Image (cartoon, rainbow, N blue to C red; front, top):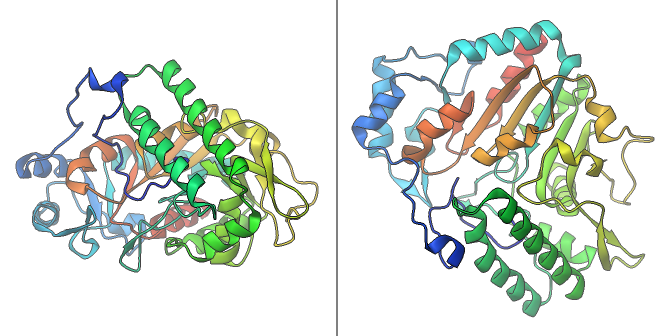
Length: 381
């Protein structure tokens, strides 16, 4: 996610202002379904309820249940851009045959060949929390200095349209993202951010984990499957969210994100290592991978393997993300098989076809992690 307060982010933003770089090039939204187009897209997909194992959930393409799902999507009410979950099936599989092929291959290779790559915000965490739009790990941060909080918001207003602009070349956009993240990090230092402010921000935040996340992480830890959490945000906030909301740590998790350096009194001095932004949060940045820390700041794993050693020879991947761009988290992995699970939290009518083309499994409506738990259990049998 972005280094600013972003409360309502669509899978791909369609607004391009105020950037002059983007204003000269207009573009159409990637996908807007009419009812007929949506029904046509759904006819080639497998849809399921998310309440049973993946094998048991299958609804045959073109069946009455599929058509009913399209009708329900078309008529359902929305709240903050998310279709009401009770009206729509929870799981969509665009290509069941290809998914089964990947599952067979991974199962044959065994879990010793597997690694899990996950985004954090709105993937492991929930999109809606008690009826309120959940906050990202950047959005929840209250620096305790109104002047600097405002300055970070102004940076967001300037740079976010540049991030989402489709006409800016990647090389130029990368420089802009490095500029944005660098300025934001400097403001956090100049504004006197403290670790206590992070703890208070998390305690007051509207943030929570999806149902099933703890079960998933426990299963993966028990089976010694490494989990890499990639984030363009702040590792220290991610870890504090896990401490306060999960009340436990996991030895198989490594967080690949921007890390802060505090003095003995908890005052932010600067940042450690490589700067990670939205365009480079992938396995090319594994030198930044670090295990979780306890309440005293000590690593929960003694003599922990670094990121490269942890995933060496693990050539099968399960990737979890909520944006199309999260598919790039596996860049740098020479994998044999990759199963991708996309969490489509909002604007389902507009994005369903795009997501089912990009991801093997699509979880709708801020759905639970049940399908991923079922998948791991199936692969381990």
